[in-house]
Length: 199
Image 1: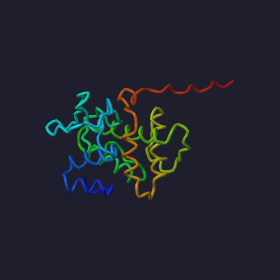
Image 2: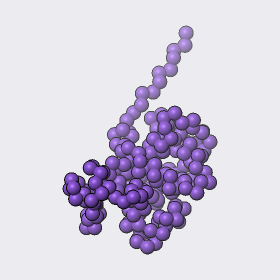
Image 3: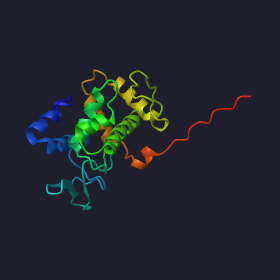
Image 4: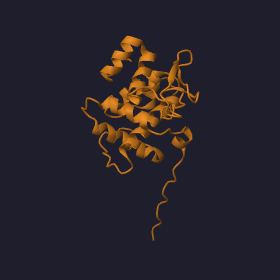
């Protein structure tokens, strides 16, 4: 997983199974602690299709990945890269810019930007709409108005989890529990307030 601090259980699974299957196993343990269930019908009669990297429900025949229906869904970013991104964002006291994430996980700048904003969206959902954010550590210079709340959520989340042994695990759980967020929604423009005219 690289030289970042994560969760001992994740490191154990990666050491035993390898990076890709270990990352998938970690997400599955967090999402389905009592065993995999179909995301469509809830059946526990599920098998894993190794060649496709998907689960298949024997009842409704739906095929799905562990990321289905979560903020990680349909991102084309492998699970292990999501997990690296989470660690880097948590460890950076002043924020981890997308251009630096791009250098670490590859792909494109656009993809890294999307990954980071999906993580922030999950943090915001977990905190709830009425959470009091902290400006401390707001290191992103001049964040755009449409993304200000996302940066505030990230800052608050990091502050709330400083020193917590389960900070990493809690953040990944937030990603698995958050509703999907589309690229279009993340990039929509917010109307800027019109300054009042004097006089």
